[in-house]
Structures are given as structure tokens and as C-alpha cells.
Length: 358
Image (cartoon, rainbow, N blue to C red; front, side, top):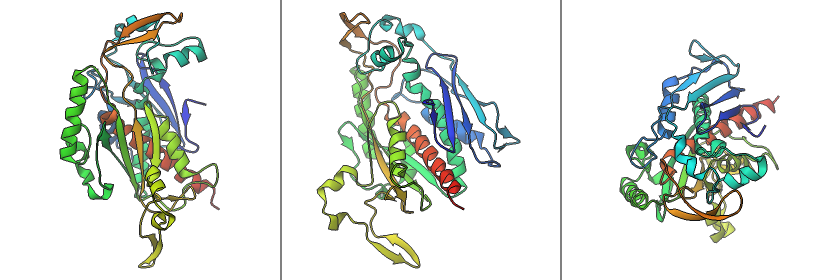
């Protein structure tokens, strides 16, 4: 059950970083939806390694194969099975750490919990498992397009370099125009330079991915324990390296008074709207029809190409230096993953909302 995500729209994933492949089974996908496989592959291409000098040099085509649930280009309503085969594993890069606990990795906790761990790239704890999320998220995007919902994420901060304007003041069409996926070309260049500098030092850097959901229907989310923002937060915090989540004004709202923070309603030519959107499109845990926006904080990648102190599986002090191919910053490749998890959450809650109405 802990390898599955969702209530109505549900994906169960499998696979490890250096196993045969990564895949999943999607249940609850609406029937009769035209499946754009080229779009799904393009989403995977945004996540795949080796796409630029900013990312890991691991060369994987990451071509998805659909095994079931699609007939004559449309969803049948049956489970959609898929797999992406691993083709460029360098498992021997990890031989030197098979008996060592890497700092800030899942090695120690996995060993303590399960009594065994796959040291080759972290096994199931590797970010490579997010391939399944991107495939499922691409399908969710296709379904959401039918009801006019779009999900767009972008890099808004790398290290101390960050965007200082509201998302409405940026041209989000520019996100894919640079390797770091930032809508501000000047800031993007600064971010890229910082990542390359840190990479040259054998170190890593973290940052923030921002996401905007437009066209979300009013009424998604449940009272108390099924709040939409809680579901989005849980989805984001399930992504590797994520350390924080905030929606709407988030922690910035703590500096405001209620008179400044409240989103005042008004009649907008027969439609009830709000003059501001500090709430981030969600009030009382339920979508209110305004844009949903949130920020996701990613820590620096734990694997650094520097010597570090640690202990081995017997608790004896030692040192280690990682080998292999690793990202100096996860932000560029994390953008499509954030979009995927957001799309899956919104589609799931849309379908869940339909089941609660007579």
C-alpha cells in the first residue's frame, strides 16, 4: 500500500535505480480519453538524466512502453500498465560504499528498517523512481486538459538567487528556454552559473520550485482530514530531497495583519471572485476557483564528490568519497516531477469529488 498514491486515480509503482526497470500500474483513469504518447514521452524527456551540462551525465533514453489499458489510442478504463527499462547502470560505481552509510542518504534508515539495502544508487530510495510519477502525471495532465486545468512549475530559486516577483509578472512560456527552467532569463543565467560553479567544486546546491494550477474547479477537497492543500503538501513531501512546502502566501503571511491578508469577495460581472489571492486558491481546505500556487523547497543533493566522514555498517569510523554520475542541483529535473504530483492530486480529488455528489 505504501507504493501507491491516490484514492480514485491511483498509481502503484515498482522498480529500483539499478534494477531491470521502473514502472507502474494506474487504476481509475477515466475511459475514452485520447492518449497522446508523444506528450507523455516529452514529459519524461524533461525529467531524464543527461539532458544538459547541469544534470547528471547518466545517459538513459527513458522510453516508456505501455502494456495495457490503451486501445486504438484511447484509455479503456482498465488498469494502465507501463515500464521504462534501465539501460545505462554503472553499478560498480557504488562498490566502494556497499558497507558504508552515506551522509544524509536513506542507507542507514533502510538498513535499520528492513535489515537489507540496495546500495546501487540507493535502490528504491533513488530519485529514479520518480519516472513512474512523471508517466502517471502526464496522463493526469491529459485528463485535466479536458476540463481546462493546467499545471505549470518552474525554478524560482537556486541557492541565494531567487525570483522576487509574483508569478503573474513572469512569462511562463519562457520556462523551457533555458536549462534551469526559470521564466526570468537573467536570473536563469545566474542560477546556471552558480550550479556550474558548485558542480566544479564537487559540491551541490538546493533551491525552490514554484507551481501554479490554473482552471481548478471550485469545490475540490474535503473538510478536516481531506483538505486539498494537505493532499498537495503530502504529494510534494513524498518527492526525494523535498524539505518544505507552502501554499498561497505561506510563511510570508505571518508578517501581515488580518486586514491585509483577507481575500475580499466581490461581484465580477455575475461571478463571485476575490480581489486578492493570498489564500492560494484554497480556503477551508477546498478550492475556491482562483489560481492555486505553492512553493516546494529542495535540499542540496546529498551525494557530493568530496571526502566525508561517516561510519560503516559495524559503526566504525571511516571516510568516503562518492563516485559516479550525480546532479549538482535537482531543480531543473524536479520541475516536471512537481507538475506530475500536482496533476495527479488534482485529478484524484476531482474524481473523488464526483463520487460524493448525487
